[in-house]
Length: 73
Image (tube, rainbow, N blue to C red):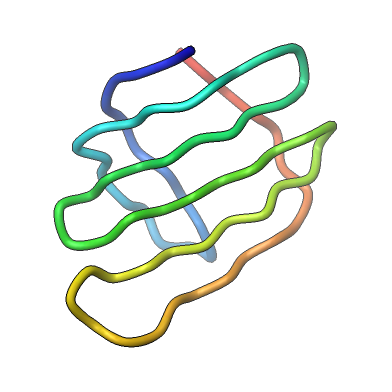
């Protein structure tokens, strides 16, 4: 289990996380990130990630997926 703060970059945009919660294990992660005005859900496994950015109080969402390197510090 993981929790904390930090930053996330998706589609060339950097997001500052107010809180992060989720699970890390081996080469996998399942994270929910709260940014104050939006929520990001990221699932990462073996070099591939899937992410959804959902603005709070607004319609719509953005989806991202690609290869990535998971860095946790």
